[in-house]
Amino acid sequence: MPLQLPEGKRLAVSLSPDFDAQSVWLGTFRTTSQTQLSRGEFGAVVGAPRLLEVFRRYGITTTWCVPTHTMQTFPDSVAAVVDSGHEIGAHGVYHEYVPKLERDEERRLLELQIEQHEGFIGKRPRGYRSPALDVTDNTLELLEEFGFDWDSSLMGRDFEPYRPRMVVDVSLEKGNRFGRESNVLEFPVSWILDDFPELESFKGSPLMQSNEAVLARWIDSFNFAYERCPGGAMTWTLHPQTIGRAHNLLMLEKFLDHITAFDGVWFPTLSELFDSWNDDNRGQANQDAAPLTQFVRHSPLHHERTTP
Image 1 (cartoon, rainbow, N blue to C red):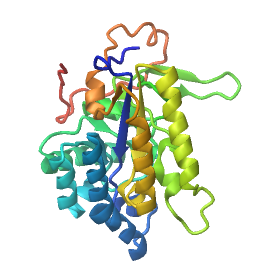
Image 2: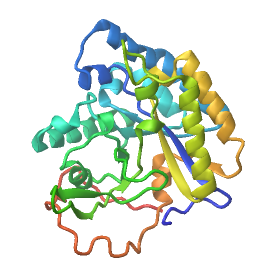
Image 3: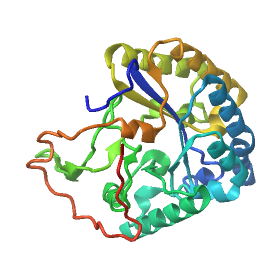
Image 4: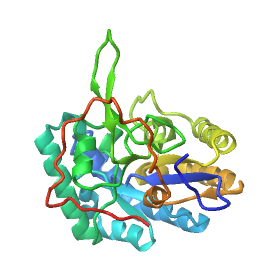
């Protein structure tokens, strides 16, 4: 496996929060309800500090994916994340629903969030997670154009990073055809390793699960990866407004008690994980693949990155 963990480490685990605050309600759910917005406020004012305290207590540093709307609305809360030593990844401007965006608008918002991110954080984001974990046929090319190292929006693996290939030709009768491998490294996610769908309360929501069921699923997933996928990596997506609720935070602590009892568990940021990846010999995956539309390499925001 191209992922090279530090000596003595068996499995990488990223508990990667999406710090959406109010933007998820404005962007994805398209509501300005004061009740819904107050849930995002809880995440920024109560949930995020609680989560930071848990990470501090367990000695965990990770990557928070933060819309720039959150940075502007709750600057002190985001500054506390930075001051605690966590990485900040890109996560949209206002948690926009990416699949509905035309290419030019997706590009404009990606450029805007980079500029706003750099203005607030003081440096460019190295990675991106799409709001609502959904992308367009253009997203990977745009991430390449703007020089991103990694993405964490897709679900093509479970316990290993990979170079994603976009499906460029869909045929029900002849099968689908893939394009070339992306230059962007994918850290895959999964709805079953995401707190929001199963723990967030909605009126009459059929998706909400008990904490016991979610905890058991998370533990089973970790145990499988630890025992059967040595040298692999796992990514959880957490949301301060969800996992920061008292009963959910206690569940998270039970989960952390379980996984920290195992030897060789590493808690890197996603960019640290990227820097541990070496796929100089990428094989023949790109040969005979249908080419994607050529992306532009000369954007004023494009940069070359040299990794150690």
